[in-house]
Structure formats: C-alpha cells, structure tokens
Image (cartoon, helix red, strand yellow):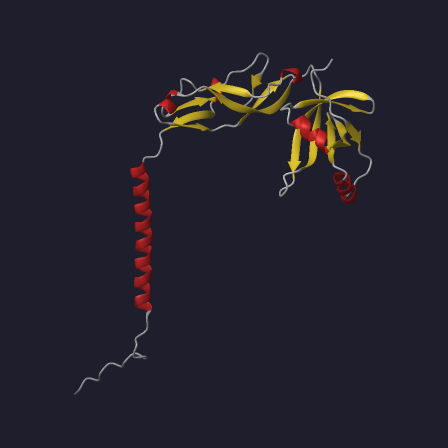
Length: 228
C-alpha cells in the first residue's frame, strides 16, 4: 500500500479560455501532468479535494491517469492575484526509486542564547532545496538555534538532514541570525538627522526663490548718466 495520499484527477479534453472558465465555474482546477520527454497531459481536479490535499503538507501524491497509478510532485501552483484562489496546478511525474530535487520549508527549533539576552532572532532563509527519493521527502527541515549567541549566524551547513536527504542549497548561505535591537537613541538621532537634511533643503529652496524674485518697482532702473 502506498504511503502517498490519493488525488482524483480527470483527463481534460477541451482547451481554450472559455472551456477553462467553465471548468472553474464547476469548482474544478485545470492542471497539467508533465512526463520526462513526453508532452504534458491536460487534467482537471476537484478544487475542494485539491485544497484538502495541499493542506496535508505533502508534496507527492498518487493519481490515476488512463487506468494507470503513478506518483506526481506538485511542481507549481498558480493563484488568482486578487482572490488568492488556485487557478492552475502543474504536476511532475516521479518514480518512487529515483531522487528528485524540490524545495521544503525551513523551521527553527529552540530558544537562542542571544534572544535570552534581548536579541532578535531573524530567519534569513525560509525554504531550502534538497535532493531525495519521493518516499523520503520531509515535511520541513529544522535548524537548532539554542546555542546561537548575540550577533551570530547559522549557515545552511548547520541544518540537520534526515537520512538519505542531500542538501542542494549552498552550504555557506546564512540561514538564521540573532541581532541586537536598535537602541532608542539611535532611532531618535536618525530622525533628527533626517529633519535637519529636510530643513537645509527647504532653506536652499527659499533662498533660490528670493534671488529669482523680481523687483517690486517693475523694470530695472537705468544707470544714472555721468555729468560732464
């Protein structure tokens, strides 16, 4: 029995904007299944079932196309820019015994020493790319920040990896750091400096206006003639 959740899909015969619009009105999401070296297969999936499947946090699902069971990776999900509803999804066929590359979330674990001293924990990396078999895809990876001191950083190489999972993201990329909070005096000083700059610009502009201001007497008076 497969460990992957099943997702019911249907082969999509129609094409074009009007067909896709009608499909969405029936609470179905258009999808494409991509195979290695084979043209993609147009599919549709029930919207509610797709939402439910994605909420499980899994990346791999089992589907049945043309009476053939196969495993697929959710490669890309497109959302409506206004409603945030799923409007399209791409599946990539995978084999259970072959490794694949994909992104997984990165989560922190523990309370950093620097945070205990008043520092702020900053997560610089939210996802990382890994290489593993479909059956070994972790829901997320964790990085232990317990020993992280003030003004210190943990790198990708410090992330704990399960067995048979390889890291693809470069080891020297910063993942998490603890930074000192900004002092109130520094914030006030910056505000004063900004106000000073604005004031100087205003004074320069005012001086320019005064120099360009025409004489109130109208035309410039001619120079007095020298008496002989």
